[in-house]
Length: 205
Image 1 (tube, one colour):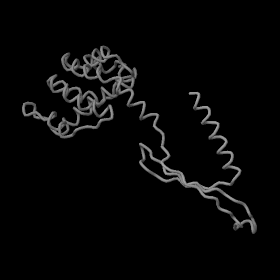
Image 2 (tube, rainbow, N blue to C red):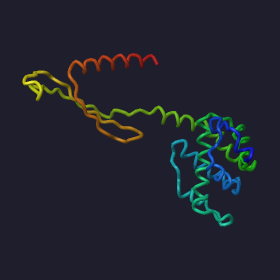
Image 3 (cartoon, one colour):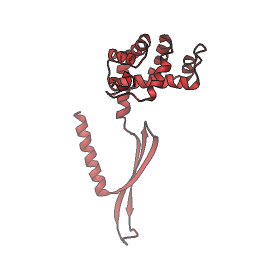
Image 4 (tube, rainbow, N blue to C red):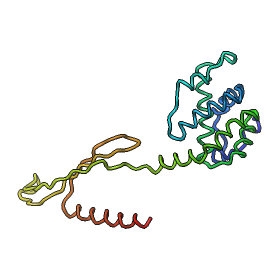
């Protein structure tokens, strides 16, 4: 095995990179640093939440001189996204990243082109990752009503009110969905008390 395959890389959390990544670096090493820089610029737009322009990416990963296959084009995008995404998540310094990329066999000018864009957008990427990881479902609306249950199949007479809630939630992961549930009045009062306590605690955060 080569030395690089037994090394641990800080941009990947201090462990060895996956085996498939070496095939991607072999393709990246064939490309000019100028083209790498332009492709990184597009991938960084995706990693900062601005989306990926696939039309531009298709042009940038097409080369008559190198005759890239469709799988090569996918390898270029996957390899660069793997580098930039993991380096930002593990808060790796750009100089350390450049050194590690060269240890993996990438030319110096290619490594420099990757790290220049990474350094410029690292903080923005980390902020975007944080918003994604902390994103909770937002309540778009809340409807409620009081039902008065006269009886059930188990009890002939009940004469007890219950609260029915219907929440419309907007989740970044699952989109919009509806959550409906019913609870007795005593549990509803407990829920309200706990929500009021949580609200007071959040005011001090």
